[in-house]
Image 1: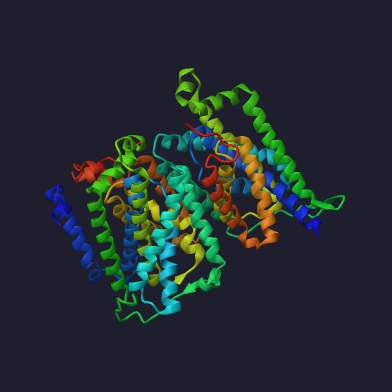
Image 2: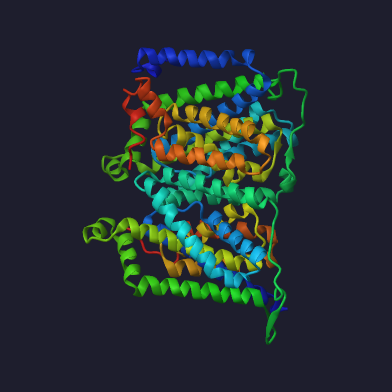
Length: 339
Length: 289
């Protein structure tokens, strides 16, 4: 526990505690609408954290992370619908299958030394391929969708993950906090240093004896497993699954935008990014509703993202961190200026 | 009975040539500027809409509109590279990807705002004409489209092989620093390359409108398709892009009649995975470094 906070400046800890406290009491203060937005924000923060583990820590760009969300969602939902197995147990199946798929992609990719853009396209290819396969699987509802029985939303049943939005909020808040702690711990472990060595210079890392294949595989396995858990949350929160809306490349892109905007390779980048992009989308919905023109929201959304890329090219978090004088930790600073 | 397969294969081949022409646009940009154009399909859809407007409001046949659209997208590409994309050239892959994805989202949104979400096509008097060659029946429209795609690709090859500008662009792609050292105007040449890539898309879009109805959400599938083609053929290889296009066009068409039409893109993705594993540089690609 102590190691987790080592080296963080005191005012950083205070800010973190205030931020955490605000999130914990939020459900009692805000409206249902804001709460639902916060749930989405935290969901993206969690997935961003898991995805960041691959690109930000180990330098592996995946553009098909919706695949793992989909696998987690469909496997836990199928167990629940067809066999009545609660998600508390189903989540292990979800993790196992996601990790298996991640390892398959990783094995094929790294074994044949596919990297950079090519690896990213391999992940897209697997996601799209799985999408079409699920499209043609009756057992998983094919294109017509796969529905969980909608329960009454007043009681709280953690075993079956049925309950009020407040329960879902605390579930995803806990998941996000644990993921943050896990990433912080990993980053300062031996494993984390191996990953950063691979990220910064693959050949130099290999020359100094880092087993590239092994450590890349571990990164993919942890990232895909964590993302699979998000899939279980997705399935039971939304109660309906459509192949296109779960596995589609749009989904993969949507879930990584926040992290890139926030700052790849930083611990708070995924969280800040999610807190910027999701409310931005919601705000634009509110602002553009009056115009009644299709696409105007997407246009401004794209414009905002493009402007952030052009003017904050290392992400927003490193900039905020330096404003708050929190950037003394070397690993929080190193990400953006990589070439 | 085999006639059906031949007919389908030929129509797939002709469609594949259009795919190939559009994939050339992606391949040229990646081969020289080293940027993966994630807005590829959206730019092509822009070309299709431009052709549609010329047809609807001025009554220009898509085949005559083609040069206009090509020039228009050439200018669009030049400005896009020079004003926007150039600024992220030094950043990591994922930032370039993010910018191009943002551009793609904006392009879709603009098309949606102007043209609405419905699929729209052109009605040509010769749309249902066909040539009969022995037992084979070839759609007139598809044949025109295929021949134009072939001519466009040939023009590209000639440009890069024989003209000074083409050679200079290849030099930038081969050795960026070297190109700067010998005094090439790399900024201009890069913009020109992006412009040429987009011009390919304009031409491909104009002829694609002959056989496909256009709607704003057509972009992303075409982007993915072009990726598959370029990787199967070999990134940065121009003949590879054309070969990949034909291969994908024919295999899609065959998968459409042998299996289910909805499985045809699964077939393409399977082919992509296979090529990435067995020959990651693509069929005609060169091993780098």
